[in-house]
Each structure stands twice: as C-alpha cells, then as structure tokens.
Image 1 (cartoon, rainbow, N blue to C red):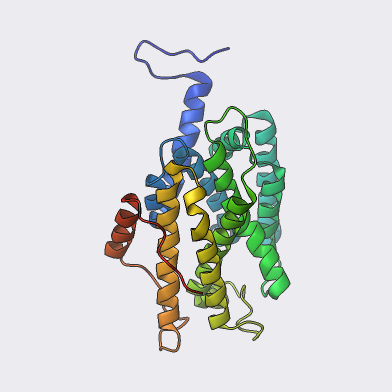
Image 2 (image 1 turned 30 degrees about the vertical axis):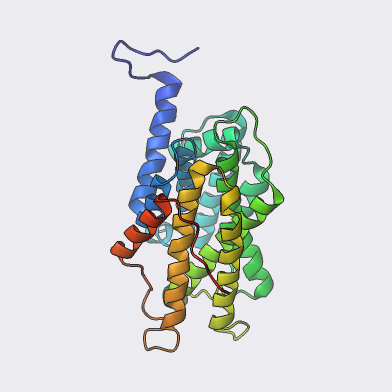
Length: 299
C-alpha cells in the first residue's frame, strides 16, 4: 500500500516513518559532534542524510560501551547483551527494511540503498564488544580494533559517497577503498591520543601501547600523518559533492595532529585534551568550501 498524503502535502505511513527516522539520526549527530556535523553540512544533499545515519548508529553503539550504559546501571555482561541485540536488530533491518528502533531503521535505509552489508556491520560490532573485555592493546589487537571501529566506518561512508541515489550499488575502486580505511584509522588514532589521559584514568584502557612501551607518541603521530597524506591523495577521485566535506574533515584532523605534535614534551602532554578553536574550524571549513585541496601533511 502506498503512503497516503493528505491535502496539506505532508507524508504519512512509511514515508513519514522514514523521514522521522532520518530526522532522529540528524539529531544524534548535531548533539554529539559539532565538528562532524559541520563537515556533514558541506556534503551535497545526495549523500548528506545517509552519512548522518551511519554516524548515528555508530554513536549509539559506542555509548553502550563508553559510559552511559554503565551510568544507567548496566554491568559489562548486560551491556554486551544490549550490543548483541543491537547488532541482530541492525542486520535484521537491513534484510527486511524496517525496525522499531528509529536509528536502526534510518541506517538500514542507507545500507540497503548504498550497499552496506554484513561484511562491514559485523566487524564494527566486534570492535565495540572488545571495549567490554580488553583494556590494553598490542600492535595486532590495535590494528584489529581500529579496522572494526573506524576503518569500516570510513568504508560505510565511501559506499554512501559512491552509491547514494544509484540504481544499483557498485564497488568503490581499490584506491578509494584504501584512502577511506586510512582516513578512518587516522581519525581514530588522533582521538586515542587526544583522550589518552581519560582512557587510562577513567576506563583503564591503553589503545596505543604507550603505557606498555610497545609504541611511542612520535611513531603514532608519524603513522597518523602518513595515513592522512595517503587519504588526501585520493580525495580528487571522490564524487564532487563529497570532496568539500572530506577535505574539511581531513584538514581538521591534520590540524589536531599538528597540535598534538606541538604539545609533545610540554607540561600539558597527555593531560589536556587538544582542541581546535572554533575560528580555526570555520577557516578550515571555508577553505574546503572554496574548493582547495586537502592541506599537505608530511609524515
């Protein structure tokens, strides 16, 4: 049955439900990340609502393992059950096209249109579960965690960039795939460095191996800058309505990386969360909007 549209032109039925779900996803991104929300506004209208739904699901899952669930009284075992149920519901919604969870429903609409499948969804939830059981990482577990928690999110966004509005989803090129993975990895490692003190003191986690001495801050920053440089090289290959937003996000994290490097050896290292002032964010966004290429990053 097609949705009924009253005389006022407002949708009802499934069309209204779909729109409400996407609005819920947009609310999540606006409340949780001003930086990501800013970059998202630079996307064209074709990919923009889909990227919001990807972020919303990722954010909700992350909240299960990073504080709110525990604050509500959930034990780690109970949080795992919630996360498992969310994964099952997400995969079911992708298959059926419907969920009573508005965020999951919005994500499923995007997944079905853009070709986001189980091969990306399952690694993400696996990494989220890792936070409930693993506190300290070596090189191998770090790489596995970052793939599931960040690189696959970049790959989900790439599926959106390439396929939103297409009749049939197509596989992105290997070059774009590598760039999306490396940009996601750079974002995650930057956040690990920014949250180093909080992760250690509040959550007891060491994602980078700095506490155990298996990695150094300089080595991590060099890896971040190499990943940012590799990702920047393929931005011109993205669809035109995605390049500004990716450039803005890239340049924001390049700025964070530079500030983290400048912080090294000071009394603030590891104790003060590095931030980019709003005026600088606005300048980076304006630069991207004007069509400049991503800023050069030298590993």
